[in-house]
Image (cartoon, rainbow, N blue to C red; front, side, top):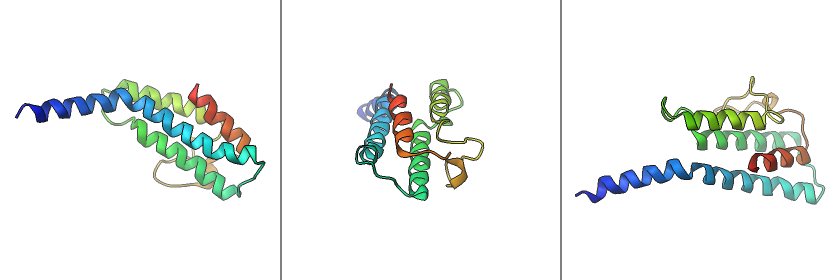
Length: 122
């Protein structure tokens, strides 16, 4: 009977404490994807790259979940930090996590995207 609340509390604690590691894994995976294009000197169509960049920022947003709780300043701060790092590739005045807008992604190429993602990891 007491195992269920304890398990739920342990799971909730793990989710909050591990969200930064999971976030790093997400960005590392996305960085590896775009890095293949850089290493092979391939160029993705603008629309494809824009959707990739937007969907990455969307995944970061949903993973951080800055509106999880109005008292969770750590998540809000993490999202502000993420926006600061992603501003080189995203125009946050035009960005929305639930609707893709081509204009929200700045005119960047794969090497710039890879650099921003790598910098995000450090």
